[in-house]
Length: 140
Image (cartoon, rainbow, N blue to C red; front, side, top):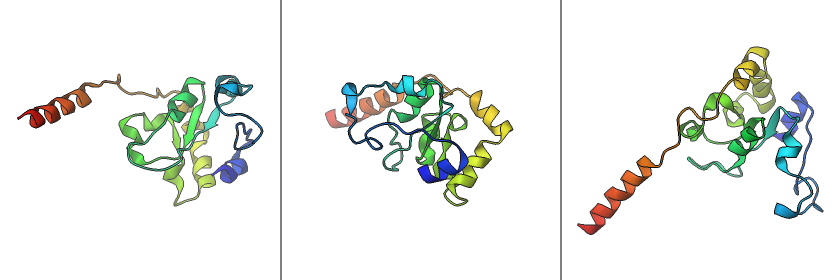
C-alpha cells in the first residue's frame, strides 16, 4: 500500500518502522499532531482486518486535521462516516494506486474534506441493553 501511495503522492514516513532507533511511545521526540500539522493525509492502515476491529488510528488522524487513508473492513461504516476516509481495501480489485487516484479527483477530494468523521453522537445504550439482557438471562 505504501508503494502504491508513493506513486500517487509524496510521502513522509515517521516512527519506529521507518527509523528503528526511534523509541516507541512517550519517549519519542515528536508528537503525531505536530508531524501531521501541515499534512492533508495520514496513512493509518489497521494491522489486521476483522469486522469491527478499528483502533485509534482513524480518529487520531482525523483529529490531527488529516484525511485518514486506511485499510479495514467495510463495517467501518458502523462507527465512522465512510465518506470521511479513504479505505484502501475498497480498491484491492482495481489496484491501490488507481483507487487512490480516483479518490483524489478534485470533486471527490473536496467532498472528503467537507465530511464529519461521525454521523451520529456515540452512545453506549446498545451495549448497556445487551448487557442487561445477558445478566437477566444469567439470573433467571
